[in-house]
Picture 1 (tube, rainbow, N blue to C red):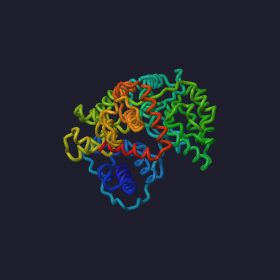
Picture 2: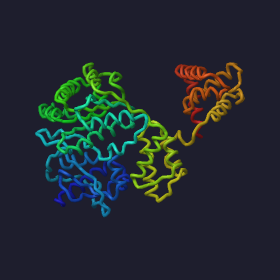
Picture 3: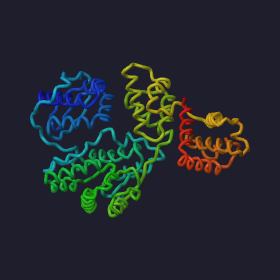
Picture 4: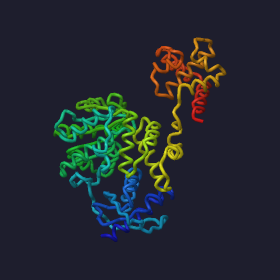
Length: 459
């Protein structure tokens, strides 16, 4: 069996070498090898935990595609730490050769059925409740998710609908529920899919005349987790299938967990009967984390990767990436990878250098004073006029532009901005912001001037 999996993995490496650039291939994929195992548990040896996490995060779909392309079957892979791994020799431009057929398998926690062609997305071990940093913006969603994980199908939170912006932790919570349930009950049939996968499976079932297998597969789950449900919009036949799947599971006391980028009522193109059912249980959101929570997220992730970063580095990254946890962790991963490969000491200067392309507008914090001086210079007025009572048309425009930029580029409150402009009321700041926004929509030249001003703030 060792020779079989070694040959399969060599062909997978050949396949993947044509899908990524050479530097990425030789850095992350080449130093891997097939280790003891079989096709139902395809084990890939990697040199360290950092490489395992990076491959899971960035190349899991590519690895799945490679295994499927080479074996002509759905395989489940697992990354294992193997410090002796140096990678198998492979001609990276040699086309794959035919391989021995492999057994079909399903994801952990889902019993084999006649519909194994509909294999769900594998739950990631890194998405656990213990690894989720809870802040004020996610406290309720976390508590609800944990309650569902402890008693799937037996709480009032069915379905559990979690919504929020990109990279805020929806997928983490959904998969944490699945992992928790499987850990507690190995026989539980937990099915996690993206909405695109559900749609693709349905289309394939029509093509292959296996709709009954499709319905059996999805409607026999104990727990169904569907990510990014908003992509069902406009797909009437898919919605019809999901409607009946949802009804079957709900009526049988099975748990449904859904995620989306917006609340149910804001999703256009979904049938009313689906929207109504999505609100039967609990609808909760995840919001962007606070600065303190972002620092805690970075600290925990860096420590799990074996690094103890200086506080000023963590603060710099957390202060630079404010809305997206995925981008936040991506910046940290990029910094750690660079420092590890180049053997560099991690400090703020290195972070600024390496992350300048990832966070181009976060090289330094912009202050009200900087904005006032830049705008005054741009409009050829005295900086003192920003705080004066003078209301000539030229000064008033410059002042309103400066207030608009303060609202756009800083996190100062309306009251604080008003105080910075000669003790003006917060309503004045609101009026200035609205005025400039309306003018930008109508005056392309003004928009270009303001874009020029914004760019000058970071020079």
